[in-house]
Amino acid sequence: MATGLVALLDDITVIARVAAASVDDIGMAAGRAGSKAAGVVIDDAAVTPSYVTGFTPDRELPIIAKIARGSLINKLVFLLPGALLLSEFLPWAIIPLLMLGGLFLCYEGAEKVIEKLGGVKHGQTLEDPITDVAAFEKARVSGAIRTDLILSAEIMAITLSEVAAETLVTRAGVLAVVGIVITVLVYGVVALIVKMDDVGLHLARKPSPAAQGTGRALLLAMPKLLVALSVIGTVAMLWVGGGIVLHGLEELGLGGLTHLAHDIQHVVEAATGALGAVLGWLTYAALSGIVGLALGSIIALLLHKVFHLGGKKAEQGA
Image (tube, helix red, strand yellow):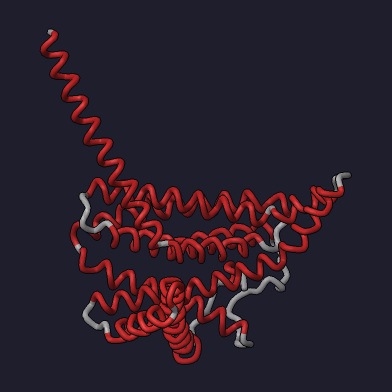
């Protein structure tokens, strides 16, 4: 009896150690993959607040919760199994699919730039009258979840490309961890952003001068923050999309443009001393953004001028 119990405890100890090692592997791999997906996360966090613009304050958090739930379903129910199947049976397709998503981000970013420069706006804008609030909310949430599907697919594809050599269990764990953590992070930040004006208004009504000053500062900062987020989101789309395409071309053996961008990066690094690493990275990011803007502009031109297809859906707003 004692011998059997000791043997059982030894087996349990071995299993526990293996499980702990697997958790450590998943945690480290998730950290690496999450950092690679940071650009898409920034874009996601910057774009999402626009989906609650035009609604009453009491509907903002419920709308964000609906979008967050849809985002989790996108990642865990649809994309995670699909990514695992892809990595098992069609691993060669990961890079081309990642590049297609990158081109979509380039197109979205370029279209925003074109609109800001006075180009034709595609779809309903925030100035259009809302006749049916319930239908508009449903359409806006659906549009946000569809857009999230693209961004989530990019996040999961980037994650998968970072852990392609890991075991199936580790890949599944990393994809699940990254999907959940990023969703909570993004929509938690979005919730804080969209309620900042309500917090500011609440503080501005307090008797304390310090609270009033803080509240007024938040109210004044909110419009500027939304503008900054819009700019950051556009830049992130172009930078991430262009970078994904450059990396994909290199992986497919067409790395001439990518090597040129890296050569320029290295020249900047060598010429700027202690700031070389930061300025070199910024240089490559800027070049990726320029590539993204060029590709996105070509795609927008083809869609709207050659094929005469509509741009953004009405429910996605301006």
